[in-house]
Length: 279
Image 1 (tube, rainbow, N blue to C red):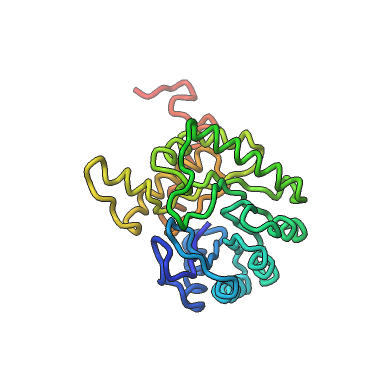
Image 2: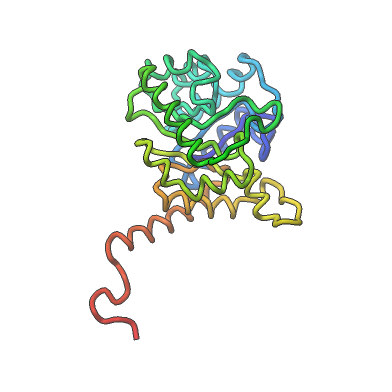
């Protein structure tokens, strides 16, 4: 899943693709580099970001969704507003990626249910305009899985079909670096929810902390793509349905390698398997 942020203030590429033409061009480039679908968003969800109004979000997102869909791109719309989701679906979007899992707008679940589109349900504890809200956990893996389970049950009760649901642990949302790393170490726990899962780690703060070490300054967001590719390979190995990334080529290569290794494992394609061990 390649990312197209049609915003002036996203944490890693704000302003670069704010123009519709530039955004569509970038989305097509991501597909050429190996993206299977493109996630278009018009509102930054970074901590401290100011929310945009509905009219502005629609102005940013809908022309880009329409432009990419007209080129045959599978488009996901990244929004917490039901009205934006509805208009994006009408413009050709195939999937709704709601970081609030339907909590921010009560109309979201009925809109998605009626459309029949797949719906990404992310772990979410509230808007982050006041900072990293509610980021306290006793057991982050158990709590995130439990809260996602409760949210999935609500989504199912709202009429979205079980085979239309994707879950997302919400890396970086109300979580510190140690929380994100713990979740990545236990992605297998997400499979118990019975739905495909999405990992969205690209360029996030916890990667900067890992790369900086205990004393250093975190590298800028755009210098975290190699670390993102490493996480993508681990996520692929853990069975992720998709990884959401800003720079596609390195991650696509990393995922191919992870899949090839997994294929060799499952096929028993091991040196010496014929009985003529290495000497």
